[in-house]
Image: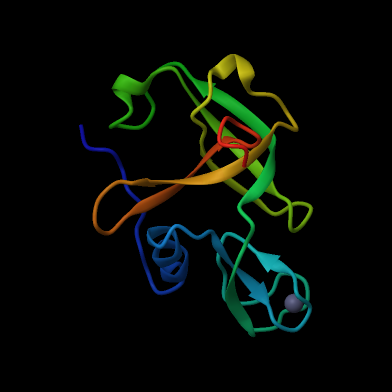
Length: 139
Ligand SMILES: [Zn+2]
């Protein structure tokens, strides 16, 4: 079975274009400076429509996680079991995103420092994913 891929539309295009260029970009309110993710039309805090994509550091901590041991989504059969992590980004408390992590499941814990990596799926889609920060390459 084919893996399900994100649907790219006008509201989230900046995110996928940035990922292709190996950047983690999210919308940021130009009035109150709050980061907004997932994308929406207006700021959740001050209702401003002045939202613009800005680049994040790509660093964060595991906020929560779970392990998929049975097939839920097609295209992941050969990867079972695998972990899905919710990462809280360092820029803002509560700014979270979801992805896979490439470390052994037994190494995952709440608060584990992680950084973004990029998995190219095809010419349209590159997925932001996660790896343990402070690994062998010293990042
Ligand atoms: Zn705002």
